[in-house]
Length: 352
Ligand SMILES: Nc1ncnc2c1ncn2[C@@H]1O[C@H](COP(=O)(O)OP(=O)(O)OP(=O)(O)O)[C@@H](O)[C@H]1O
Image 1 (cartoon, rainbow, N blue to C red):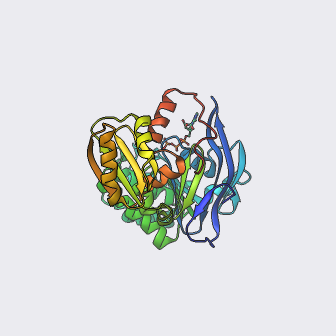
Image 2 (image 1 turned 120 degrees about the vertical axis):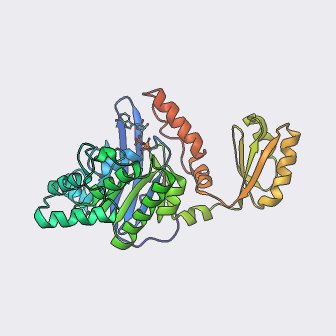
Image 3 (image 1 turned 135 degrees about the vertical axis):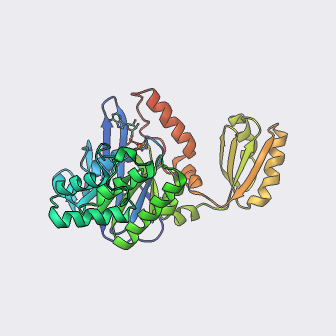
């Protein structure tokens, strides 16, 4: 990890299999997608690149998988430079893009056979590999059906199988469970855990689901506005936050400035955020803080519908390092893309 990115958690000793330094990428129209992004993924581990829509996750994956060139910066994958030896990189990696690469008008089996041929597999070896993958991804019974008849979960499992045909060393999974129902999502999580555990694959996974990153990744790198703002193990990231998270739900939208002024004066509270009806704050002692907060809000004329006290979550980690809630960042990204061409603020959002 290059300087400038906060890191927390155990000291790392493994070999970096993916390494990116100071990646910068600006798209035509002036959108700065990456603004000095740096990351490493060690052999046999899962790194979760976590960030809201538009944070720069897909652009990072495109550069690391040789589908896009950075304006500046360097990256190596499996020991090969992505700009100087893209062919070597491509042979070492499997890619499961956000959009399925499978041909809907072909069967699952035909898709796998074609993919295997592209990587030079032939004859019995190819058939064996295809059968093995169909079985592992529970697609044997559906192997001779057209992909357009598959459910979302079956398609996604086929996508991962396609990415694995040539036994890659590194697997890139770009939002592997977006659009899946909860059951299919859990099944995919189990499969990813198995791939990383039993097969020692190195996996870089992008997601905008906090829960997914928490569940799957040994290390999480939080990306915001084209930079990694913090990285570490999920437990270390959460452990860095002192005290409890107190979340209050107001009966009506609060006046941000007025409520902030009232609550900022209370002792033992920090990281206050007012977002519409939601008020979040960290408290050294959450249970003791609730009555104090309720009384202060009542005095300010804000009625409270619900209050919860929780141990820190990754959402709290995001708030602390990106300076806003995940949901706010997503809404901002949507507004940005609606006003196409609006440059992403290049400097905001650093670690606090
Ligand atoms: N081809 C493109 N042309 C112009 N702008 C682009 C292009 N691709 C991405 N962007 C912009 O670059 C920024 C980063 O996009 P990117 O797709 O890398 O983010 P992301 O974190 O992967 O988000 P998502 O989860 O929505 O894919 C966004 O503001 C996006 O609108």
